[in-house]
Length: 108
Length: 128
Image 1 (cartoon, rainbow over the protein chains, first blue to last red):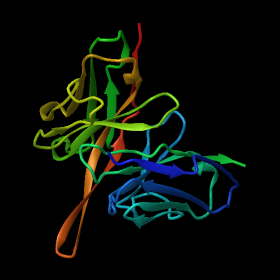
Image 2 (tube, rainbow over the protein chains, first blue to last red; image 1 turned 180 degrees about the vertical axis):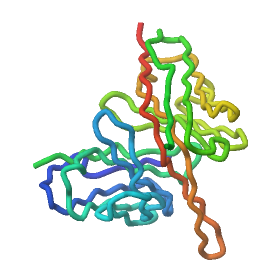
Image 3 (spheres, each protein chain N blue to C red; image 1 turned 90 degrees about the horizontal axis):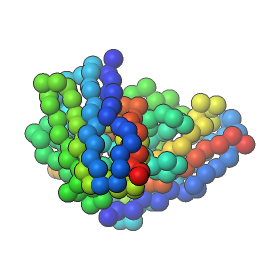
């Protein structure tokens, strides 16, 4: 199985900060990598697919990059509504589409 | 409005069975792959199963042989039959729509798969 490891597990940041979350795959997943945002008590929401393509309606401050084993989600200027948990997911290897363990972004 | 609504969750004893349902609306259900994803309390997300438009199904090893995903296009409905339930199956179960983005490079077509619509989830508790 392909393991997805996110770092950090949590971070504290202020409104306006630039935030970077990393996701590393245990083997290459090419660009088959998605990012989701989840707020407490809510379902996950798709932000980025194919490593760097933004889902329709997602603010431009969210961007994704990387390929192979190393990926990054960047929030260019953190907004109050961005405080949430973020998950990466690989869809390279069926039938084992795995998620990272999540990165919780909290208010400093 | 594109919407997915799960139902059927509840409390079940270990070894018991439960059937989850997901009602879809606002899109052509038969044209999309559909899946189930679960989330244990305080923990992360785990993909549980997928069913393609042709009825092909896939499962991870943790549920293979115990869970069965199915769909009824005439009713715009997705199901998950869960048998031989264990305490570790306790989770919120989400229904999600699968979509694909295509790109070509080096003479090869890449199909990038992602889950773009999610329901609010239904809670399954396995306990005696």
